[in-house]
Amino acid sequence: MRHIKTLNRAALGAAICLLSACNKTELNEETVKTLAVTGVGEVEVLPDRFVLSGAVIKQDGTAQAAMNDVADIVNAMQAAARDISSLTDSEFNFASVNSVGVKDPECLLYNQEADRTNATLRPGEPRVKKRVCEDQSQQASISFTFTGGPPEQAGTALSRFSQSGAIRLRLDGYRINNIDEIELQAGEIAVKNARDKADRLAAAAGASITGVLDLDSYQATYDQRAATAPRVNLSGAGETSALLDSGEPVEVTDLNLEAGPQIVSAAIELEFTYE
Image (cartoon, rainbow, N blue to C red; front, side):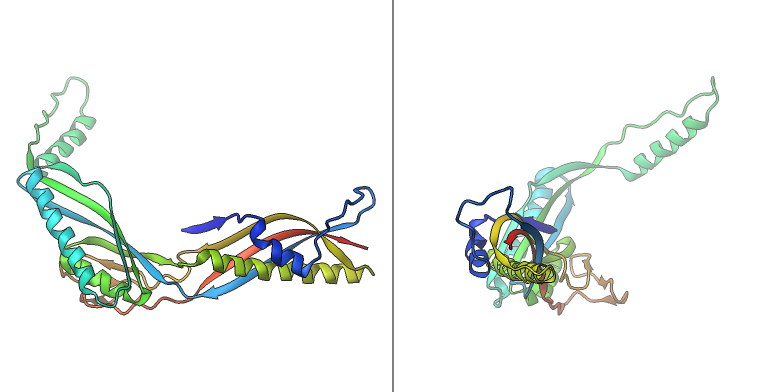
């Protein structure tokens, strides 16, 4: 997920005025000379948390029984998370439970063949009568996301949830707790970069920067997937999984996934005055 945020101008006001004297006097718009410059800044930071997602899908004779089966796996996952002693952050978010009837697959296949046959019949030829497919069982399902920390425990959480019975597990990315502070640091670097550019441009014209007139725009961005570890698909219930980077199947054990640094960047457009 790409994150783009516009920060309140006041958050960078101090840095702007420190590096470029803020013009507080009334300026003559007809004679003032201005220069618009875009500055950029980057801060490299290690993430604090990881986010993974998955699903629990169970079939049983009745919808209630299937829902109970799903609840058993959910309880097992929550217990597994509590058993990971090194987790300092742990939060589940579950969607609503869905239930649906599962039709007899042979009946569904017969009706598909009937549709194909009927589509090729000429006018007047007898059509194949389709069957009424009864529910063979009931299926309950629920999707979830899990946020935990520190990031190096992502592999452990993936494998434990898989062993508990969850399926479609994947590592979605990482999160930074104090992202506002990091974004401000990137913004301050962007301000300095803009001032340095403005000084060089003014000097090239034999002039000098006298102050900053306005903050035209500011954006701080970071990509939550920038430091995603190798993509991992886990089939659930202790079955084998595949590390897609290597293509070699591995048993579902405590996977050692290491989060790399993320880059938080900022871009700022400042309008300077010069003489």
